[in-house]
Image 1 (cartoon, rainbow, N blue to C red):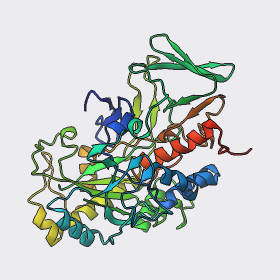
Image 2: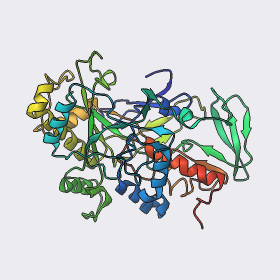
Image 3: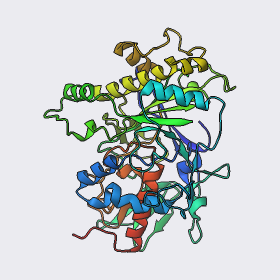
Image 4: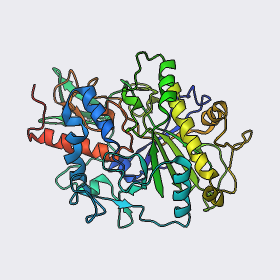
Length: 435
């Protein structure tokens, strides 16, 4: 929590013991790219291909977005990087596990043994399943805010200027009215960021610290996930359902050399180097929530209800992820690292043989989010395939709110690709869908 972020809290979460969970957004130039963890993960080909199928437009498939993935980045390995998958002249420079830690080799061995995953060299080539170096977008030891990486030459910036409403006349977006009464008018289009006040399928990432720099992605057991989906009321679930495909990375596990989330989950752990966290993330949540206006006053925080952990499918994923992480720490190499697990009062340490009920109880009490909200202005429901808002001319949305389905990744890469494509659409480079 800081003055550089929108320090939101969710409404009480029914499946988190009615806790209000901290949510954040960047409150400075370049937005969250100025305050995030700088993780640069693309996600799997299957995720983007599902996106294209949902909206019936191949431009949003993996192959359709690949030119924008390449355009965005300067890949960290110009000699070994696949030029079909990676760019080498983009504004965003990447690094791969550039920092060396004394526990790195032990952790790699522990997670390889404990998860059964194989080591892969590139998780950003559309096939992320495995244990891979973590890719970040730090450059020369510094964060790369979007406005600095791309530059803002020729752009007029108004700071401390909050928008009250989009000015719409005769069904056409004409500009924006600020809280202080000023109006900024446009001669062509208004580009919005998360303008939708009501979700059409809002989803959010679940983050759960476990016992405690490589990362691993994995799919949960198919039959258990299939049964969970049926129990949630879905019928006619076959092995070909997109959520059951082994090429999609549901679970992300990453060791972090700090007690992340401890201040937000009532764990009294000092940031003194004596504790690590093993983050377990559900990258493809099936729970859906909403974002609504609290009032007509733009200074009031929105009512954010991610509806965390609402489906049995999400519970199956997190249980599996927790058990994978604990199996890693139960290996001989893991035992060299871990002295003990720090737990909340009233809880016992978990193991890979802990019951579903024991794991669920821990989740309800201490799970947080690693942010990445999306879907509140979903393509096909709020915007069309050219990012134009249905029912209003001259208004587009360009951010992660347009994603029609979760992507098994952190959302920087995908959001930059959306923005690159949107820029082409806006300046009229023939990238719009022909109707």
